[in-house]
Length: 84
Image 1 (tube, helix red, strand yellow):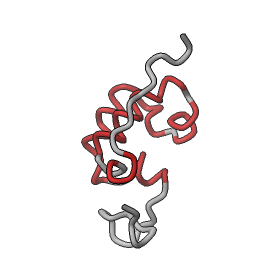
Image 2: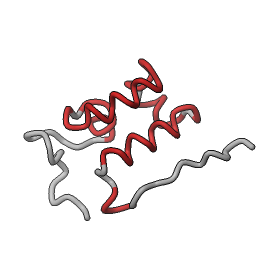
Image 3: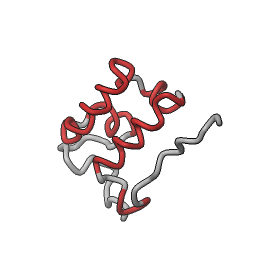
Image 4: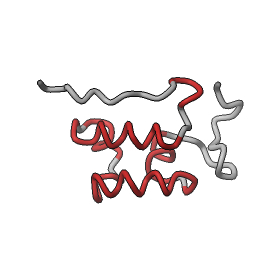
C-alpha cells in the first residue's frame, strides 16, 4: 500500500517525487536503462515522459518492471491501440 513517509524507500532522506522515481533514483537504474534505450536522451525529460504519446509504452514498461506501483495498481497494460 501507501508508504508511511513521502521519502524514497531506497534513498536516505530523499523525497520520492515523480522526477526522482522516473529519472533519478539509482535503485531503478537497470529498468531505466531499458527506458533510455527506447527513448534515448528524451528519457531524462520529465515533460516528454509525461506528455508524449511516443513515451507512453516505454514508460509503462518501465513502471511495471520496477514493481514499485504494483501493490497499488497491479501491472498496467499499455494502450497500443491509441490513435487508431
